[in-house]
Image (cartoon, rainbow, N blue to C red; front, side, top):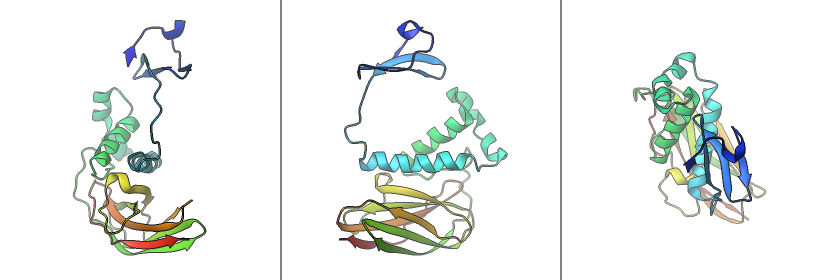
Length: 208
């Protein structure tokens, strides 16, 4: 990345030129970088990080003012907004297979939710994953993992979706479209202060 002043003869140029160079701005600084296309935008790691990103982006708006205010110091260090600090640090935590937290720092003192059975329902090129919630406590989300092979260990790159715990409502995710074959699923619950529980227990279904 090259930092520039007045790129492309303008103060705030942005966009791509000839699929080669990208002009943009980061933290108020103009820069130019090479245009890069991911070799596999649907890799496990890409899907897993995007799934957590989507959950966090939606969750920010539901945080209390007190929760959001805890991100001010980190935001000041990054020269960014509280939202960006919340997103970047929790994505970093997830990349290291640590659950996100509503507050900074994570207190790691909340009571995990009590979860019930994990069930699968076969559809047309789809499998509906349903995680029962027995007692919500301080549960914040449910991570849904998928693998093409059985007896697998949940990791950040096997994540396909994150559901929000809302009382004792079931957390439901429709996994689609799917090619014919066997699919194995597992879930983990996490609290609002960054505790990731043990997996619920693996279930499998076959798309025909």
